[in-house]
Length: 264
Image (tube, rainbow, N blue to C red; front, side, top):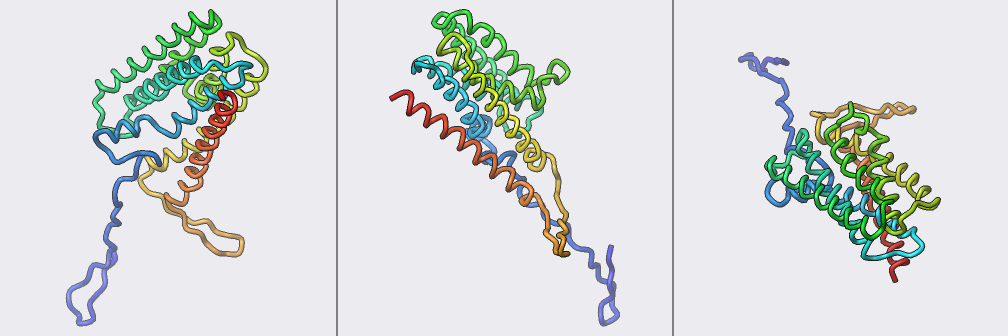
């Protein structure tokens, strides 16, 4: 504590700086709405990330020689149920990373409805496409549960598991749902989606750390010429989240362009 004496020789004056006001609690994600009510459900959907991964479905389907619009819509719905609803509900149930006020029972119900919807659409797909879709119908729900609950000793909940399950898998599933087989083109696209999803996770992990777990950030970058650049939370977050926004829009627009070109 810093203490100074007044000029008149009176009592000492406490010069200890007042505690810094931390301000409002930062949002848990750049797309998160204010807490409470329907806004919690919006945040739960992770809109840019859900759209990003649904775009992989469109890309995979549009690589087929002939694109069946009904099958494409059904595949999109299945992945929305599995990823947009079930996976995100289970993720929030496991530790409340988004700090929503959604009751646990509602999250469990959402996860069950999402998985049931995805499996139901997959079964219908098998009747239309054939047995080639069965492995994807089995692997999909396993990925959702194993990743979000960190089962199998965390063997799936890592960079490779995320990139394979949330990037490559939608591309391959969508192509098989169209054609009943695999080919070289979707395999190459799946590798590209894997790489993009790996980049997404590499950017989002430090961004989440800063938003959800860091109490404060303070420091400087000392330049070669002796100048100093102050560091704080916003300085570190800005390039990470700008890249994530740009990448999500880029993949969605690429998928939209392919859909427009193939479904005319």
